Image (cartoon, rainbow, N blue to C red; front, side, top):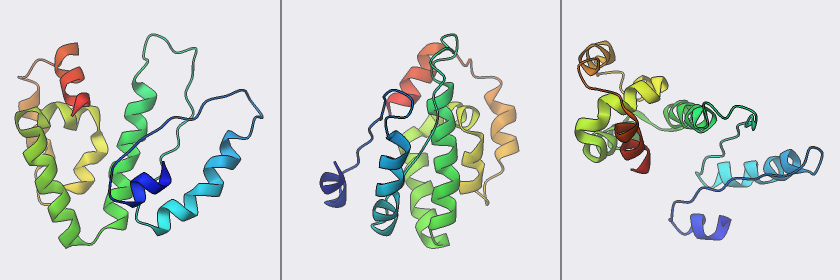
Length: 135
């Protein structure tokens, strides 16, 4: 997976296993290598007992990704990232902003409060959320 991502492709994977099986050590051993090549490592403990909110842990990891992107990129690179996000999500950006509150860190020039106020008018249903997450 690391070689594929190093060649410019995007990829995500999940690591699972029993307590004490070495998952954390595996991730820690790869983090420095991924960081040095410009990649991002997201870690999130998932509560398997939380069946009523199955996506909350995934959303939390992506919310943290917003802060990593902000901290590791120059203002010029951030401008490219924000332009791509706005282009890719278009009218669904308000849904994305509600799912990922830290996305406001990527848009210091954008008035996120205004976005949140107008997003109340848009119905936040499961179909909108699923469509936004698939992007």
